[in-house]
Image (tube, rainbow, N blue to C red):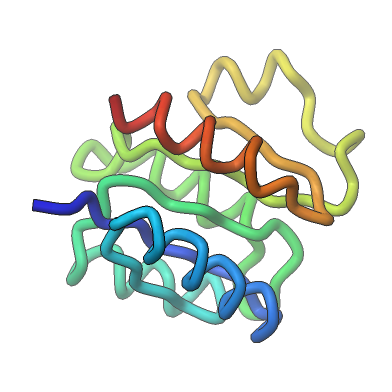
Length: 120
């Protein structure tokens, strides 16, 4: 049974690219275009991992991340944050709340390596 990955990004081109890459790696891919939809879909889809953009409308990626981390039902879901601004993510904070991050533009090899590590 393939692992399910949820991609959350408000940029259609990024969603399409990631869906293609992850599907070709035999992952089941579901998506949302904003943080609010992501929180609803996570309840329905029960993903094994979330790839989450930071800068989005409605609810940003940080808020989604914190809501997941402070909910016992979802706190163990691995999260990879996508960001155009690496400096925003403090390594100590990311370690404390158990998240990884990948800068944009996305290095697909780096992203796939992190996904494989987190789902192992």
